Image (tube, rainbow, N blue to C red):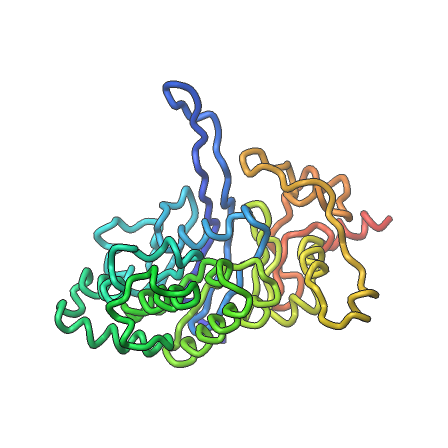
Length: 334
């Protein structure tokens, strides 16, 4: 029996206009996200990985309707978020929250941490100003912060403590879905593991569902149930975490994983790195056919003309690559 998805993203596109001249005429578009589709099931963590600028954060923000999608659908509990108006979207926002990348800029410096965490509850009329303090103290304890910190300002906290405050704010409305937009990227390595462990504990306690956006492949493997790999605005591979790391099928995924250091010096010396040539193309003018073909060590003529279809190469293992397209692969081998 197929599980019912909490979140269904289909054909999501997010194009930003390029305006030039005195009249600011639109001369083109940056295709930050260009046809992304995936499902997210209740209680799981889907890791979304890729190089900087590939569109990961834009996907997360479009899902929460911080951006209005150019095309495609985003269904959350059966409701198409891309089609609803702002008034209808308001009650749904309580069920979806975001943990931002930079704890230094995502917390208002003029408010105390107690006011920051209480604000969403007051805005959504869940508690009164007087009742909010008890709930804030409960949330601070949940993220392992002392309740006596409630009247401190963000600048009085360390980076890890600020991020815990951001997590407490995200949890204040008891959401079902939390988009974690590189929540550990701005933190010291020693603090990163603590935050990831905290997120795992909270998921177990509260039954949360995570979209975990990151570029740290080792940390993504630790926390994720499934992993989706993104390149230049499109998904290239998606599979269960262990399967993807042990048997990657897309050349880009292979190259990414080959760059992950191995703690064993002997194995590190023997393993083969896959070096990619050239730079990532501009999302304003992506290559024809397969977007990865300009850097792919296995590209052949048909890659220039055919957009690879999103197919299930193996059970629950999806990718977009002509090398795994049956007849095309056989012809290439000849």
